[in-house]
Image (tube, rainbow, N blue to C red):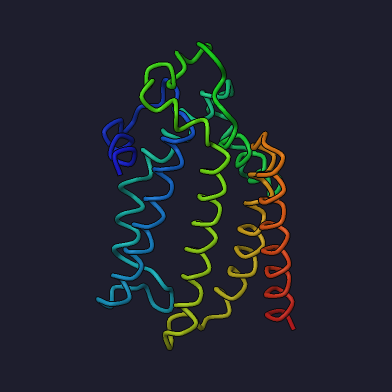
Length: 217
């Protein structure tokens, strides 16, 4: 939670560098709060027509838009890339995967043209980085779980997820999310952890393809 608050305090800070832990801890809590906002919209009846989200979701998304972009740019700076590289995500599928790999790439050692290595200024966290592979696996599993739990809830609640539009969106999201563990594998140096991520990614990709085929038929 401290990392999430730290990003908000540096609200529009596009300069400098952000280590993996700062970016992904923010991303994790941000995802949780987005889901909470979506639940509030459905409980309080503030959704927009047949959409599963509404007022609270959009208000929260608007508030965190700038800090989300800022921390992403700083994360790219940390691996020696220009902040404009974030635009690579506009390339369908391939761009998103490439950007994801960059976000999980370890910091450039020492100082680069964007500033000092944030790990050098946070020596108390050095021991945490020795188990980065384990953290990547944990984050992958958490994202997979939250994503799947959300869609299970939407299928259980009557009328929450009925439109044809969101059935199509779900198809793309299942396939994209299934590529996360596979993408993370390229950012892990430990071979055993890579194998675990490839297995997780393979299983989830098979499930994603199954979901896609069953919804298209």
